[in-house]
Image (cartoon, rainbow over all chains, first blue to last red; front, top):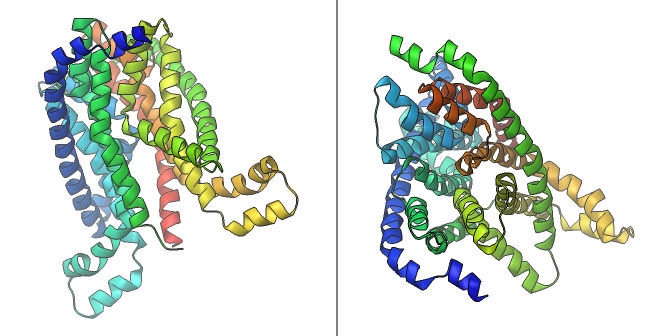
Length: 223
Length: 223
């Protein structure tokens, strides 16, 4: 037991690298927030554009969504960070991770919002237009409020899953929690920083998971 | 345009890298074949344990599920691959990946199965019991077949996520598709292998994405 404590809970090592992990903690939060805001905003925008039902536009939206649902996020990140520079497009690890995860979240969010829009009965559209609302008014005041309610539970879960992928940034040297923990682990040759990093993720994401649970019961359909 | 062809779609390079990519794809498939059934079995166990009569057991299951849902899979994998050897438990890369996936995916599959079982009306349980079926019999013959049918889209969706997640095994040097592509890129100093790997993922997973999106729309249309 003492060997376990010395290996995984070595106070000396932990105290030494705590500032690094805290630094990583804030980078993770920044990255996660940036991804959530960009991804959800772009996803909603695409869903609204799709609702206009212009055939050519919708074809490209579907291709985009399918592609980013089929590609593993790590592959997208590596593509941006390692492949694009060979044709002269360079970006930092942070930007590559932000862009890749935002695109993935955009794809999922678009699909969820679109499904939500479809789930609102057609009569709601027709009634809104019949009382003289324009397309955007009908969307804004009648259809979207109902669609958003349906989409909140799946959207929350998907968003949580994608923000956890910020850890993938460690592969392209983004100084977030995992990267800092890994660096500290190789310097000290002791896995205590990994324990610390794991604890940091729990502190960050356990409340988020609980929030997801709460949302699921709060917005559950009454059967 | 020329630089794009030379750097991204270089047939000569592709020809060289192709055997490695195929080998990597084989490893990815093997990983899926091991990891998905393990995760499904673990998830079933979790779902059934979450209905245990003993309260402490139900709490333990909730703690397990939340714990591993809050942990980014890559962090879990790193912890197992780099931390456990310090305890004298030096797992080969494949086993480390399989263990990390079992812990992570069983909690996700578990939540899905639990939702499925909860969607079955009480009368079904009572009817099955009153017919004299044993606990195992009524679970496997009455409840689970209906439960699985109700959550089939979620099960397929989660399986898609698991397949994509296997790409993180590249980080612990398991020679799957992404790892093979990155090695080939490093050797040839050309991004074509990574592009090719991306296309392989797309081709393999696109049908699953299409199927899923049809399921999702059908499910919402039924409401």
